Length: 114
Length: 110
Image (tube, rainbow over all chains, first blue to last red; front, side, top):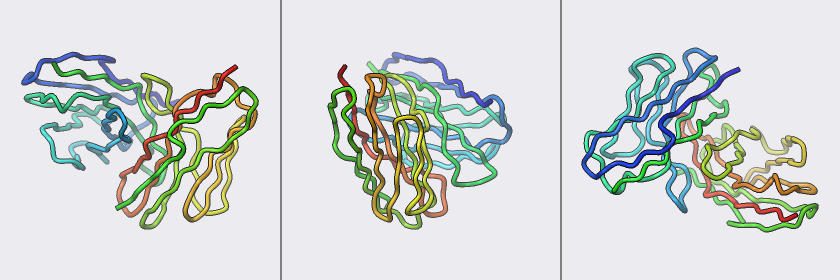
């Protein structure tokens, strides 16, 4: 069976510091990968998605970036965090063979910016 | 732009008291409607996918239905462990973007 791992679970960072969140998927190959942000009182917002190694699409202009160095690894980064980057960050995967398959989520990273 | 509206925002039930959650949507070319359950501090857990009007799916005390404008999540004889936020999302057009509603917070009291 497939599993998805995200770390760290919680993170407290000062404004202006860098960020790296990691997500890995096990039990499947060539998955579609996604980064979402969930803010209080708002729905999940898609930040990035990837349909293959080195293929990243951005949905929202921001100071965040994403990379996919390996087939089942997805990384969310920032060079300088802003207060507005606080939130709950979720990684998800879906089967790549059929485009309307459900997305499956990890347990998220709670990011607090001080 | 795809839109999803969920109602009510919060629902409090007594154990055994059946009810329904609503998800209204507007989408260009529905390719799938998805229901998720989210517990506090956790990621959403996939429940159902519905692909066309008239389709129904069931799992334990939950039943999801779909029309051309909305979906319902029916909860029959709920238990306290059914307490969670239930999220609805749609996939439309030709991309991979799920559009989520803000969710319904369900509380089931013993």
